[in-house]
Length: 495
Image (tube, rainbow, N blue to C red; front, side, top):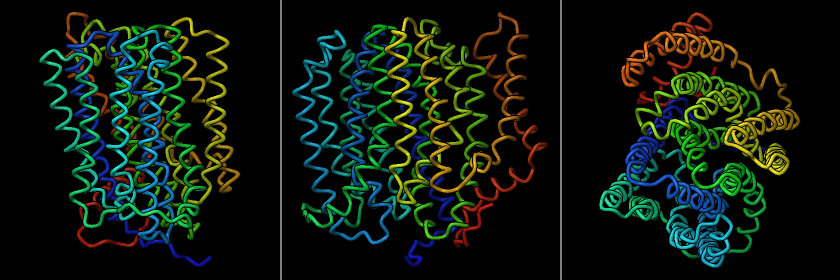
């Protein structure tokens, strides 16, 4: 096959990454502020019920919104018929999934021993058709690297929906304020994207185009479903074993880390797939792009999450209050866990870009099987056991996924993690200094003052350490970031 990949410039990639970071950073900030406010008005049990229902909704939402997404982005010859067929099929699927949730709501409520969960799940299923309306448009915009449009529609939906939900919580709506917020975010975001797009899909279905996409789409979405289901299944199982109050602490731990993880990981994945798909016919540049993406991701993510882990008790105390302090040890563990998660951020986009989404499923299957077996054998006697099982599962997926990537690309384990060592060492030095300093601070100093001392200290230590360890990596990263503001695209030259 001839090289028919799309032309991609360094400035286009950097600009897209910038807008994706703005989108996901804005969403994370709004979500984080909303969470802080909601937790002042909701009981721990209510938050546990909502989190469990949301886990199921988000998992099924991956099937609705992503079934054709990667197929449309990856295909170099996608036409209007492909987009129209995907739109029609997605709308039909969203209605079927919504009806399925309505039917299974009583069973779901009985399973988690909370009768009120049935109505919560029923109303939240309205999210599916609201999201399906714009699912095909999202793929079209990402294919064209139009991340600015996507960022604006997401932020508008989240700000308006979040504002109305918070107002409802203050007025005493309780659990239902969260339900209302989720529905409005999906509906408003889809509306904004639809009216701001030059071209919109229409109801038209062609079996030939459907057949071309569905095989790749099923494999790709299976990976996404597995990736998202592992966390959500784990959340639901933990709730059934530990109860909704313990589930509330566990979910808060995940959400604190996710606020940063969604910002960075989603931005990397969103830009990496169209970038690597555009280079799929050029193995040399593809490998360089993969290695640079991994290096830059670790350089940006390690200090953030290791820093969060090092000051977790103070973060939880300041943001959520003392009653949520039991979550802080688990926030710390999950923060340090990013040290093994960040290097594999680009694994799945790379395999998908190469037309091998099936290979990414193996590691996820291994993680799911290990997690289910560990839960069944242990019975999850405590929160510590739950978090320990989650950490062990992550180590399993790193080993298996690395082996599959080596089979698919020929990249050795050393090449897969090339460039990660120096950001890792700089982050560990930062953690040691921050934790040692925190221990020396007197108990009379409040959490806010401790953070005011420790956060700048950590940033300075990391910056100094990484500059001493790998000055060239820092220069390459800054050059890449500056290229986002260049008016004239330059040839893509990744280090």
